Image 1 (tube, helix red, strand yellow):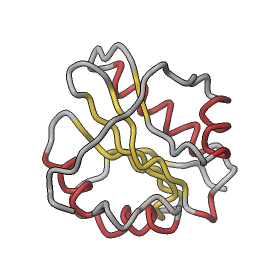
Image 2 (cartoon, helix red, strand yellow; image 1 turned 90 degrees about the horizontal axis):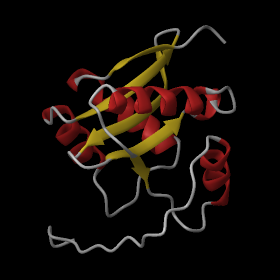
Image 3 (cartoon, one colour; image 1 turned 60 degrees about the horizontal axis):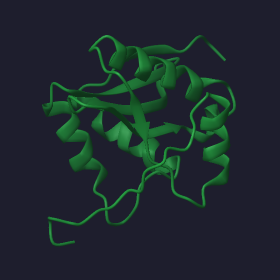
Length: 141
């Protein structure tokens, strides 16, 4: 594998990034990845980091800082590039992006039945937190 190039994605990358999210199995019918992507592009406290290999999108992560905590969403690696340390590289980049903004803590959510993803984050030093996530839709979906 050629050396991955890391950069912030832009509006023109939407189709490729969303396609990668779909190929990596990150999207759900009740979430609209295009809306999520465009909101990240419009918000100065959020970004999508993109790793490319030979000009092809290989992995992405959405990261944002709400002023209290940093959050990670849509960490995904294209199937052809999985198990090549790109997920680890992107998490390190997300942590650096947040640290540059003086963010004190990074958080993420993993579905309770996603054991492989839990193991990935545990290997990076992430631990379960003594919190419970509650939610309510405001968009009528």
